[in-house]
Length: 234
Ligand SMILES: C[S@@+](CC[C@H](N)C(=O)[O-])C[C@H]1O[C@@H](n2cnc3c(N)ncnc32)[C@H](O)[C@@H]1O
Image (tube, rainbow, N blue to C red; front, side, top):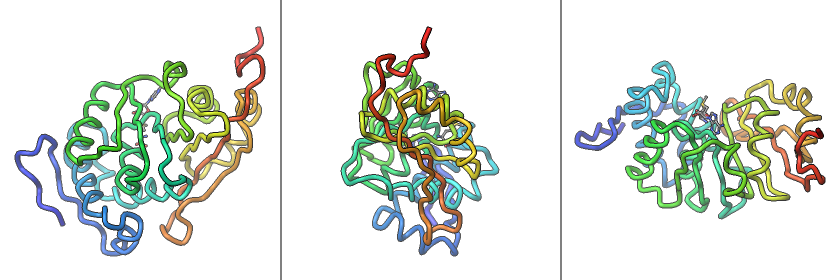
């Protein structure tokens, strides 16, 4: 267990890595496990204190948040540029940066309080591969374009596609971390996702055979949009 580090800018509260998850965490984070432990401690300390993480989440940070997000790295090619939309306290963006130092990650978050927290975490953990941008996804299309865009618990799939597909390079992918209802959501919003230029949609499980409950991800490839560029006809 880590000692709290008094004097740090970010309050940290040590989180016991449950014995049953130690081997999995070690497999997923490798030599960066210590960094993941420091991030877990920050989430349990400043994250909870500042209201970015519910207090009830603290005991299940590893299972529900860190491991659940880290296994999505399976879908990412080496050295990929990733935009994490609506990063909140850094999920999945910070976790991916910790587990995969080869990735170049941008965290997009509109709320000042959260963006400040993300900046502080990046500084505290020395994550030189991470950039924090404050803003709303739907206002970034002229500025940001990435081969992979991730989003977890940000919006229903139709709204997420409207906000995020314009931020994905043609041929790149939107990876939406969803719960058990992922397949239903995909069926419900299939027409809208296609109209917005989404192609080759699928539901993918990450972490099978590694974590107890694999992470469900909706993957949408950005195809070429038609003349309307995905806009509704007038
Ligand atoms: C429920 S939180 C999820 C945070 C984090 N992804 C997680 O899984 O814990 C939703 C986040 O999306 C952000 N958000 C809401 N609207 C957004 C928008 N239009 N563009 C980008 N982020 C947005 C919120 O500020 C918030 O941090």
